[in-house]
Amino acid sequence: MKNLLNSLLIIALCIISISTNAQDIITKKDGTDISAKVLELTITEIKYKRVDNLSGPIYTLPKADVLMIRYEDGTKDIFNEVVSSESKSLPDDEMCEKGKEDAKMYYKAKKTGAGWTLATAAVPVTAPLFGLIPAIKCSSAVPADKNLNYPDKELMQNTDYSRCYKRQAKKMKTKKIWKFYAIGSGIYAGALIYNFIFVFNN
Image (tube, rainbow, N blue to C red; front, side):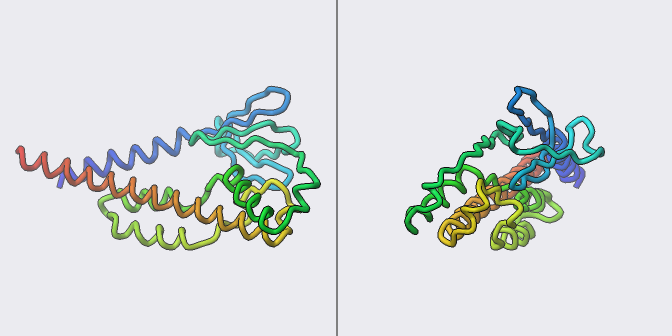
């Protein structure tokens, strides 16, 4: 029992460490880097908190002033304000394909519930069986509009583009959630094996 509690403590510390070390880098067009925790991307603005003052105020930065955001998970957003008029008048099938490609480029699958899925699957108190609950619930939900991070509001008014963008985003969200569920289950299984071996050898 003591070893199980020790494993639980180690897992909890790892999860806390990952969350506290999370840091995004906002690079402005003038070359300035801002260490931040990005909270929300809108059509025209970026809302964030400074990483050295996460309990402080929420800052807002115009997207027009930003060149790129590098997220703590290694992904990045590169902002390009130019959307050609030709791309807004593509045939339906090409518009759908553009929606898929843009989703792969701009949608980052943030705020998906994947972190909670990993935590509930990894912690011995809840275990993988209970981790299925947030995994199924979160993966079945379409990403919220505010989290889609689509590049152009006018394009999203096109039915084919919007439908295919959202469909691709949901696939990416679902993939991330079940990947995190698998990682959490692996951590749980590893903890069980570790405790079994420790008890067997003693």
